[in-house]
Image (cartoon, rainbow, N blue to C red; front, side):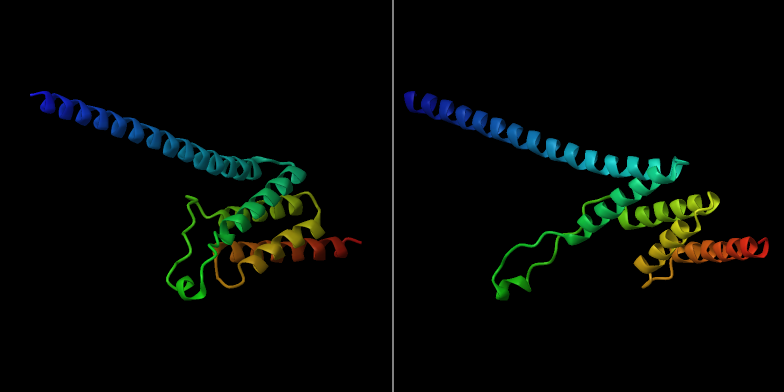
Length: 164
């Protein structure tokens, strides 16, 4: 009887430790989720700010932040391993819920069009060409839109030369 009581108390104690340990672990993961979400929301807010501003300097600042973030996402994590094990390990996938590179391209297009509308043709050209350079491997919406805006830029320049 005494042996059964001791065994029961030991089981209850072990169960309590297990519950306590699982509670601590779940608190850490929820904190990590909040950190990831705040990073995503920061990027999303930067993108939304870029697309809604009429201030070219602000749009350019937002574009720099998005481009910087897109480079950080693409760099990935490098785990130092012996050569014979390296081939067995894949790079971890990006955990960002959106394509940051596409957000940067969209912001650059918007900034380029903003510069074009404000008569800053050199800035507009630089921004639009940067989109084509970054996405030259693909025939994407961003490349097509940049080419369309560059053609419009060419017409604006021709019109300005004809009026002189």
